[in-house]
Image (cartoon, rainbow, N blue to C red):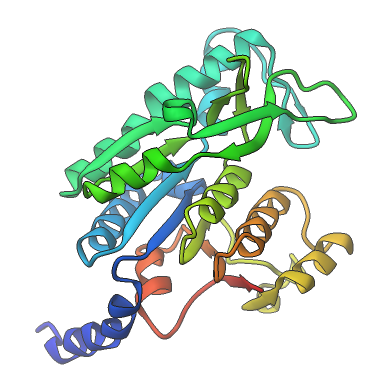
Length: 286
């Protein structure tokens, strides 16, 4: 079948206002779910990011890698333990997490971006004192699980000014140099606020926020921060969606105009969200 070049032209024309709007602006993308596991999605997502960079957007990728850490732990004879969705992290587990997140997962994302024709640099929250951590206080001692105390974005700005896409693993240290593993969703929100990003986009394995998790037709396309807090308090937003929504709230309250939770299982979801009139998932704004 002949390609519909009129449709291609219409799509590019539709994208033009968004390209103009976001040229020179910074977007923080939280990698997660299938976008980090499925090989075809990894390649298509990398191409999306490279395209975003070539039309003039500054891109920071923040990633986790919990399943990958658990897999390596089991191979080393160590069974992962979780409390309220957070990994209990003793000294050995912290070493494994840093090895996997910074040494393997981070560099795989950099590789994918480079193979797609981009220019990427992988760093951790330790580099340049980018993230300052503190121990997370919880009802149960989780060990070396941290939260963001401070973001020092100078290294991010320096790399973006040189044309690099930054890939950030959320291992960080406290003032005494102790390493902590920080939830990547929470870190993404803090980073987006610190760099005054135009958008925070979180790639997930769900369509967005649902008023009824069992009803795909109950997708909420737009929420204010106040409405998002109400859904959190009511328990409508639960489990793994909690840190994603908290991340969006942190970003928006920190000056980011809008934050998005979108389905990363959809090929080219980043481009659909960023450059078309349709938009997908859930958008949270002030």
